[in-house]
Amino acid sequence: MIQLREMQKNARVAGILFDKDGTLVDFRRTWMPAYQGLVLDLAQAAGQDGSMAAELADLLLARLGYDGASDRFTPASPLLWATNDHLASLLRQQPELGHLDVGAIAHAHFADAERYPAAPVGDLAGLFARLRGHGLMLGIATMDATSSALALAERFALAPHLSYVAGYDAGHGAKPEPTMVQGFCAATGLEPGQVAVVGDTLADLQMARAANAGLAVAVLTGALPAETLAEAADHVLESVQDLEAWLIATGRLASRAERR
Image (cartoon, rainbow, N blue to C red; front, side, top):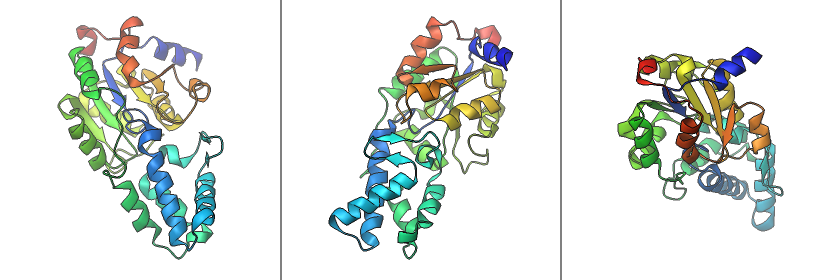
């Protein structure tokens, strides 16, 4: 295991596979309003109002691993990594909500891009253009739907730079399984050891390890603190906007010969 970590730390990168939520878009600014709006809507639909609705909304989030008082998540909170279908299923199991059509209410919130617009982490188009200028192959692997990832890629002008986009429904499995990395490699012709996986959750980093990816890089635009991510990552960055400079400074950009 020590040798594997050393190999990964010295990896030369020819491709980067990005997580979407919490990595390319700021998790708290994008998804927390949706989660908070959803649970309040569910609490009100369950017959609560005023402070009682707010208390039930807080309780529902707490059961999913979020403590509103401290604004912290448990490392394994499904709010950080689960699909929308999985989250709806977990909420459907809550005893206060058993009589509601939780799935319909949840997916109405999750699909409302006007009410809950994605908040990009800086100039993503500029970053992706520079990374492609270094000859890197780029992809997105998300536990959101593939259609949502493709829509984000179009909205923020990332699509021309991407060789691979996969959501949980793309047939490449789910995190933390290695299959999304394997799909990226199949699409690009790269070996796993040439790939850096960049994400904000333990599931992203565990996926990288399971696939024997060259690097597992964490970012702090999700919800987990650096000390939690550092235990599973080769390096922790403030955001994806620091990635290019870090790759250059550490000599991890593969040469053209190495990318063949």
